[in-house]
View 1 (cartoon, rainbow, N blue to C red):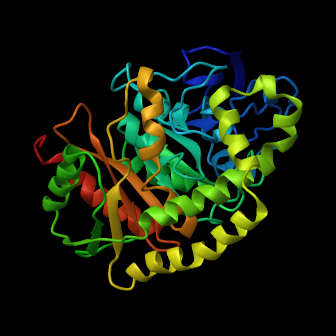
View 2 (cartoon, rainbow, N blue to C red):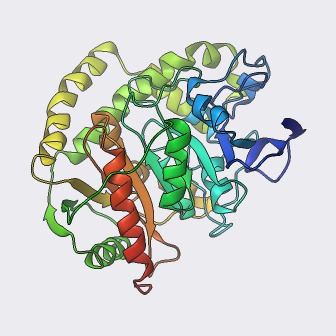
Length: 383
């Protein structure tokens, strides 16, 4: 049984529900349609004219069959187009690790819901890092799934070439539960002392040290590598993403610009100004970028990077997050491969976050590796 109890509980949820039963408590990002409910996409322009969804999004099928208790629809960075989680219409979810800092976006409310214990697992969307970035900011785990593995029918589109749905949770076992809701019958695989590549990227030294410490606690074979094309892959993905974001929201931005926040509108207009030739060139550049990444998996089981390269800034300096936030996540979306973001102990103001990237369709192995890393990291003292 589910019953609406309205807009409350701070800024984590756009709408909360009363539920009963003993299924997993599930929070759902408010870009995912639920039958009989309005999808706002965290945007006033959408909410003002939206009508209740006729049916659930396809990605909710498994959760419904499993008897998951949907506790609410979570807040987000407006239109899922931003990395800070700051929302001018529904407020900004409070980062449970440090209320002065941003929660990350765009799946901010989903990350906060599991971090503060309001849900056992949450669903988010990830187009350029929108599951992994808030997971990193809030000290939880998040999984960007292989492109096309989880259906996105009934999910508010941002950039259809990259849009994915994935789970967030306080731990790796919660992500396994979440994958079981998204894909009934899901179970993890096994790993045996994997050989992994650690990509050397510019980042806060405390984050780099935290990742090194977490890896030393394992028995994995780790080799440091460099990829001069990594930044180019991110820029290529961003060009396509912003162009498609404008196409997805053109009518809304044209007819209701007053109902879209300033920062989100700025990104949409950047997408509007990207011409067809630039998009075509970006797609041409995408092929060699993706080939370089995929070739790594001929020699390594996984690729490791920071999830974000800085610790989340305070709210007053939220704009500082824009440039470095998706530096390590965008190339993953361009290639379509899955990636796991998980916290590791650090000497910084909060945990660092490690991104574990695998080949296409390797969620089973990624989560098995995440379980092992979580276990060994928990036995490692704060670095």
